[in-house]
Length: 86
Image (cartoon, rainbow, N blue to C red; front, side, top):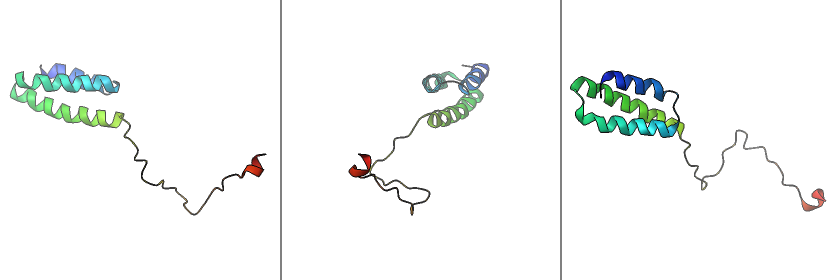
């Protein structure tokens, strides 16, 4: 892989969906062994950028064991009683 191909990947990854970014990450990783020193340096920098982009495109799981934090914890919303609902 050459620098021009890496530049095309970099430009396309900016607007690509997460599965495509994952594909680009694997493609760049697999081509590192056959790159020249300059191209490998650019590929490593691109890998950092792609991994950062991929992590921002994913939603991280919420830990439900933690309590919810509200902006105004002193405010409470009373739950409606059964008589009020009827």
